[in-house]
Structure formats: C-alpha cells, structure tokens
Length: 307
Image (tube, rainbow, N blue to C red; front, side, top):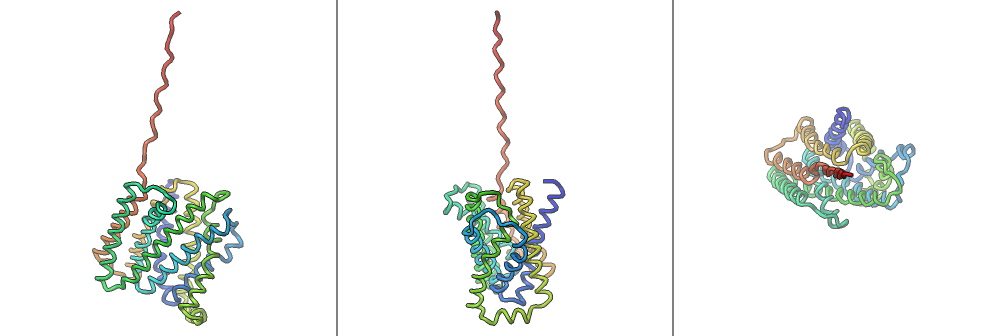
C-alpha cells in the first residue's frame, strides 16, 4: 500500500475505535434498541437515493442486515447500556473474526487450518480473562456476555456476506451495500423497541436528545458508517483483502485509548492482558503467511547434434 493509503486505512481504524465514545454518549439520551434503529435510518436516508443498489437479491440484504443490524448493533448497544465499558466493547467485538471462521467451517464447510484453531484458542483465552476481570472489577458480567453474542452475530453476518458474494451478478460495492442493507434493520428494531422499551420511548427521545447526543448519532451514522465503510471498500478493491484487513487490528487500541482519555475508563493489567490475547489470537488466525511464488524450472537446452 502507498503511504497515503496506509494513512487512510489508519484513519478509518481510528474512526471506528473512537466510535465507541459517541456510542457511549448517545446511549445517555437514547434507549439502545431505538438508537440502533435510528442509526440505520440515518445511514440509509438520504444516501439510498444517491447510491446505486448493489446487484444482489433482496433476500441477501435481509440475511446480512438482520444479524448485523439487529444482532450485532442491537446487542452491542444493549450491552453498553448495561454497563459494558466502551474501550472493552471495542476489543470484544473483534472476536467476530473468530466466530466468522468457526461459522464458516460449520455452515460453509470451510476447512479450519491449524493456525486458525490456535488463534481461536488464544482469542477465547483472552475472552475468558476479560470475563474474569469484568467480574472482579465490579462491572456486570451480563453486559460482557451480551456484547460477546453481538460479536457472534457479526460473525453470522460475515458468513452470509461471503455466501452472497458467490451469488452476486456483479461486483458488490461496499458503500452501496451498506446503504441499502441499512433499510432492513430499522423496522424490526423499532418493533423490539416498542415491545421492550415502550411506546413512550420515541417521544421521550425527541424531547431529551441533547446536542451531544445528536452530534454523536451523526458521527456514528455518517463518519463511522458511510465514510468508514466507503473508504474501506475502496481500499479493498485496490489491494488484497488480507492486507487491508490487518488495519482493523488497530481498532481496539484506538478504542481503548479513546475511552481512557475521554471517558476516563481504567484499564487494569488483567483487562490489558485479555485485550492483548484477543488481538493476538485474531491476528494469528487471520493473517496468512506469505509464500514465495514457485521458481520456474529452467527450460532444457536443446541438444546439439552433429552432422
């Protein structure tokens, strides 16, 4: 990658890591399910009128949008509302890479390599350490488990997206897919909000939304979602996926640093060790060792004949 594109990938990772701080702020004004619905409404409108629909059937938008929108983001926001620290949430979500490999093996019959299995073991060791540290630190373990299920939902969405790419009739643009997929989660999220958060959640949110909460929602929808995924997809089309994906490992450090500096979250040695194990396990299972191209065998010289 060129130095300019390295900086661009790093900027996206920084935006995604910092994104957990605006989520924390917005959750002070909005109930989690309603906030998740609003996030996707803002990401879809008005962009859906400006971006071409991706060449995939509507069912694939639903098969990706439901686990990603309702599962990942709905559960992430619920977990953080329950008390999951923003910095640790940015780390736990990275376990999605492990769940993706696991679900791909179970549902798509993709073979797991020894490196992936070892990476899973290391990452889940980090998850266990974070769970213990969460309990000892007085934070609710339930919030941690809800975020972990959110990471698993993200893994299911990744597998559905991988399957969708095999059936697409053309190249699927990441930004266009994200915009059109954002039309799927709002209705089920609003229905769940009415059931669990009550019909008064919407008028209360309109009445109580602060300028900080409104600015946070704008950052989540437009900077983190549209800008982030648009640039990420643009880089993915120009470089190998494994090369670009490496920069997603910068999200947890940016998330932990942002939460520590802005929200004054304390990072204990146990939490730091658990986060390190998760990042190391994800890296070990995701990065493919570079192999040198085979050296072509020298062409045999023609046998000289004497007349």
